Length: 145
Image (cartoon, rainbow, N blue to C red; front, side, top):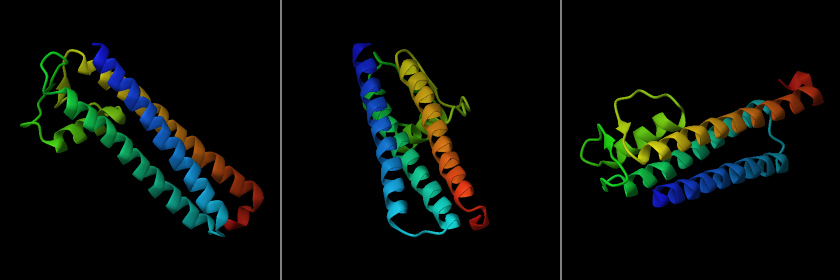
């Protein structure tokens, strides 16, 4: 139990760090250049999507490390421990989509729940970031939109 919780906490910290740095770098990159608003939106969305993919991948690696041990639990429905299955499950958990075709057991349920909560917060953080930046552009010069 302690190992799963420790790895999950480490993954949450890594994900928050990745997201924070992605937002920081996007802001810095776009402030240094005179980028039209439409391009700024496109670059921001692509950058945030990349950050989310990296974050999902971190959790997928965590599932891949823990899942072979029956003590921590299993992901029922995975086909032979392929990374694509862990990645897919991680995406479903991170976005709180919850198809149910792959289900965690034992302590991996805790990791899944915390990934879902973390994913919801990161997605909300991304939306908030985009909203605040768009609001700034609208306030500066609405004609640029």
